[in-house]
Length: 76
Image (cartoon, rainbow, N blue to C red; front, side, top):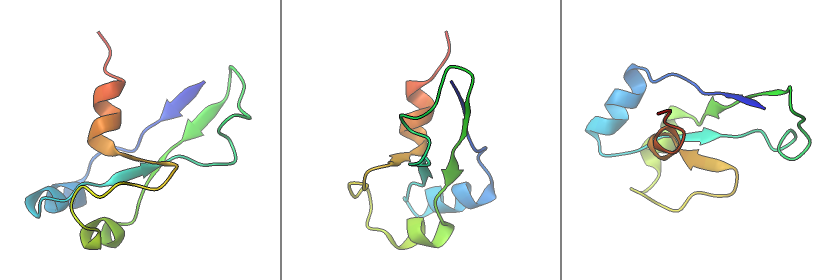
């Protein structure tokens, strides 16, 4: 299974200036139903949702903070 991650952009930098973090949304319909040769395309949550959420709040199911996900999949 391949997971395609969104790239960081200028809006992520603006959120970082405000001390906020942006989350990645994993599509629910493909989690658990995917095979070996499937590709999952993750998408970013809305900029305004991330901006108005309280800092470091626990996320609902299916969302992961971008920085945490990037650190967990680092290649050697």
